[in-house]
Each structure stands twice: as structure tokens, then as C-alpha cells.
Image (cartoon, rainbow, N blue to C red):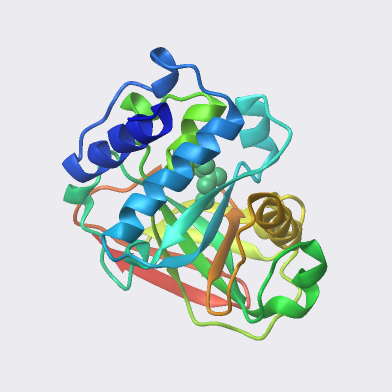
Length: 247
Ligand code: 0L1
Ligand code: MG
């Protein structure tokens, strides 16, 4: 078994067994390129179990997270249809889930490179992402988190709206009616459209086409918060409505 295959297997089984593992770089040498190969292999294992590609999620899209990680560029993770949350998250199937408010774009035409982006946006929505690092204590280096599919575990989107300027919309996250986070979409690289362009750049580099119907989670407007069992979460973005989920 190659190193990439073995590392992908370790991450995939940790997720399936709901078991936190030490970060890969504790015992393996991992650069960014190899980490993306591991990420891709983790997703291929899911596709072999009849999941289907559903889009991508962008990570480290805020200045604060970039500074925290000592990085200067965004990363991405790959979404599958099984990660889509309709209305309820089974948190018992996750290790230590967190949730964060997102801006989501709906892809209407194939995106192969940044040149395709302007004509490709078919809709925009408020969304949320459920993060669940497979690593103990959410502790990782940059290659670790890339290999772990940027901690992706689930996502939800509200009603799609006509494409519009969402560079600075107010966002709110409530748990059981209590406001737990407020922020602005401007926290996402100054404008979530920049994140979409970055997704297109990563698509070109990876040779992955973003297909019509797929979703790009542009990034979080605030820090993520722990997602316990038995709660109701509502995420609202000014002009885009709300999306809700129970656990
Ligand atoms: O979606 C994100 O910006 C988070 C990327 C992964 C890092 C984390 O788990 O916080
Ligand atoms: Mg996110």
C-alpha cells in the first residue's frame, strides 16, 4: 500500500469509527502536494461507496485563521452529496463537531479556471458548515488539515437567491434562540466572490471541474462554535434569509 493510500485509509476509518487520531505529521512526512493527494484519495474512497461529488468548501478564508495557521493562501476540501444536511445532524456520528456560518454559491456552468467564474454563478445563499477534524483536540498542521479534507463533515444551504453583491452582509448564528456569533461576509477574504475565484484557481490546478448544480462554500463569516446534541441552530444573512438545523 502506498503512503498516500495508507494515510487516506487512516483518516477515512477514523471518520467512520468516530474516533480521533493523532495528526499524521506526528509520524509521517507530509508536504502540501502529498496532503492534497491524500485528500483526493479519501474522497475517492467515499465515491466508491456510492457518494457523489457535490462541490467544494473553502478554508482559511479569514485573516484571523490565516494568521493563526501562519499561511497566506486558502485551502479547499471536497464535498459529497452525503455531507448535505437537510434539517438534522446526527452528532453522535461525529467526533467533536463545530458549526460556522457560510456564504454558498450555486454553480450554473462548468468552472475550469478563474475565467469561467463570472458567467458561472447561478445563485447565492446563506449556509452553514459542520466541521469535524479527525485529529485529537482539533490539533493539526497545514498538511494535516488538507489531508483531512479541511475538516469537512457536513453543510447546509438556505433558499437560493439570484446572484448579487454579498461582499458585506450581516450574519448571525443562533443556538436555541441565543445569539452565539455575529459577523459580516466581508470576513471572507473581503468579499466571498474572491473565495469563489480562489476555488476556480484551485480547480484549474487540480484539474477538477466544478459542475453545474454543485456548491461552493465560500468560507465562514465568524469563528466556528461547538455543536452539541439536542439543539436548534439558525444562521441568518441579511437579504438571504435563514437556514436551520437540529441536532
Ligand atoms: O472551513 C474552514 O475555514 C476551516 C478549515 C479547517 C480548519 C478547521 O478545522 O478549523
Ligand atoms: Mg467553512
